[in-house]
Image 1 (cartoon, rainbow, N blue to C red):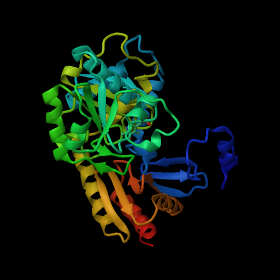
Image 2: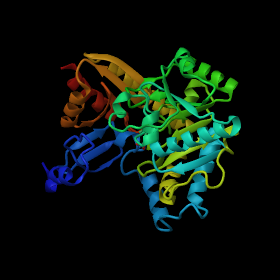
Image 3: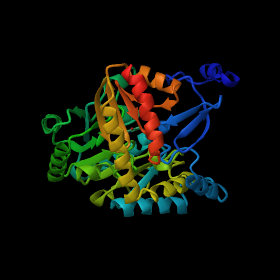
Image 4: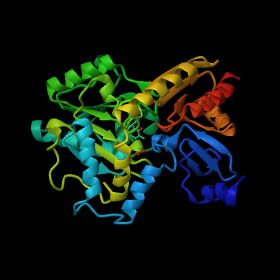
Length: 387
Ligand SMILES: *Cc1c(COP(=O)(O)O)cnc(C)c1O
């Protein structure tokens, strides 16, 4: 049903940048969503990995509401308790030394790019090239689409920034892009947008060594795979590497816009006064919500995420027409012989919300999804994919 002409109004008034599915969600609880007709869906998309503890999450709501009752915004000219609390929590949990808050994944990456350039330029003079990987995704601003190693995102928007090179995810690939001007290498430990591809951990270990030996900064973009999604607090932990800068967003805010750029060790002092800033960054309401998210990403919860992910994968592998299952924790890619968009559409009709990632189906359910909800999801996926 076209509730109150929503589809028509959307096409009249909203810039036509999204290929939307014809559904409008009214509300939900946990991993369940309801549309305006009252139809129930299981949510394996979480608004692209954002509603990490599900919809209408009590703890997050309480934290957000309490902050709304005090002050909704203070700009960054003044001290902000929720912002400090969140930064402290992130530093204590990861070993980072400083955090800069923005409002999105792209902004977190912009911050990392600026920091890497300042580090290289001030220490080595004119050292400002950044290597990113082919099939990476780092955002939609001009700098972050430049960083994104996929031609599809570059169409129409020339000229791009200088100083980016795209490597195959191998050491040969890195060496072929490396020059004496390389200041950083930026990677997604799990490439989300391009098909939920987990990078080879041996490659990541070698890359870490390569970077350390040359004082090149290793930046991990954990915008999508971070915050417990992979079954680790941050996915780089699974690879056993120590990045210099980690960016994150999506799940961090539990539903409100926030992005964080975390600086480790020698990177803590890169930025000085006036080097970077944003009006909304570290908004107290978003930060108060994020504190309630990060506090709950306990070792016990992460183990559960690993268990649920393994269960999902094991059962997906047996489905007819499934050609590959990739990912970690509750970040799963499914390769099939059927077009992914078609599968997503048919799943929606049967009451399951899934995403696509290039030619794959992508699942990003809430970390709190129940066994029963996983089984229902698997049943629907089986029906749709196997026929
Ligand atoms: C989504 C995403 C981004 C961009 O985040 P926005 O909040 O949409 O700006 C950057 N990097 C990765 C890995 C992402 O998945």
